[in-house]
Length: 335
Image (cartoon, rainbow, N blue to C red; front, side, top):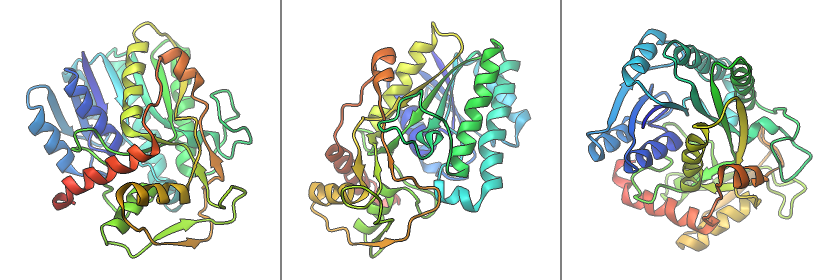
């Protein structure tokens, strides 16, 4: 099988690409490196020189090159990761997020239709649920957003759903909760291009001594310890959900969404303490006011994915913390 992967040098896209190649698939990847690093592509290329192909393309602007590359790939399925991804940053740069996330997706769909490629797995997000009053969240919960990032993801889902209803494409939209950890080979891990917004890489910066302490945004939430609660999922579990989605697409028509989460909520403070205990490192922290766009509690009801995709998250929060730090130690000279 040939898989066309957008955003193949990012944390999730890179991990998926690496694992797909290990499984024997051919991968045609692209990235514009706007929020990722070229060394991920270099690692993948050196490990899998025969079945990995890459082009540097911005799908929001390079429509001619995108179409040419997609034609060349003759792919069976598209897995679409490309896009900007930080909630806080999206509030500062809304136009950039709309252009990259929605326009890029629109161009990709057009190119798929021109090349008669029917199937796509879309990298969506739990941010499409906004501040859901129903917890845990299932796929039938009301859709709304509290951030520009979430709005771009939800709008892309609407776009994909509309096109799928016309019979042009078949779509599985995977709504991620909070991926952390690293690939088992410790080659691909979360290594943000700029100063990170996500929690785990900010913990890592303190562990490495880059930052003196980590900022916790909000200590007055109505949770056990006052900090926000999230559903953290190991990147390996998340990636395997994509292979299950690709398999399911073979006999599926239309649009369907699936949550990828553990079904467990973990507070910001709890994740920091688990990292400390797992890796024997002290992580100093300080509280700051709530960050715009963040929600109090967000965790998944993964029943639909369990039952229909035959997928289930298996790894613990402790494993997530250990794998993250092991990958950092192995690659510390490349950071």
